[in-house]
Length: 146
Image (cartoon, rainbow, N blue to C red; front, side):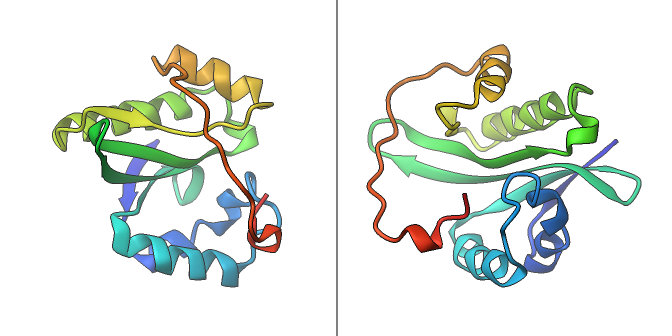
C-alpha cells in the first residue's frame, strides 16, 4: 500500500470512483466545481493506493479558529468496501496525525453522521472524542451530496 498526498485538481478528479462509495450520486461536474472552491483554501487529499487502484481517500485542510488555534480537519473519509478492516483507515489517520504535528496544529477535527456507529467506533479507537454538536441549517438541499 502506498500513501500519496493529492494536491492538484487532476489528481483529485481521478479518484471520483472512490468518492462514490461515500457519495454515490456525486457527478464529475459537481465534484470538480466543489474542488475548485476548496483547493484555494488549503484543501488536499490523502489517498491510499494498491498498485494503481485507490482503496482509501480522505480530504484534509488546515484552518484556524479562535477557540482552538490552528487545526487540521478531516473531510470525506472513505475506504473502499472490499478493503475495509485491513488497516487502511488507521494508515490514513496516522498520516494525518503526523501532518498535524508537522504543521503545529492543536488538534484534528472531523464530522461523522450521527447514525454512523461504525465510524464512531473507528474514530474512538483512533483517539478521537466528541466535543460538541455540529448544528446545521439547510438552505439549499439540492446542493447536498448526501
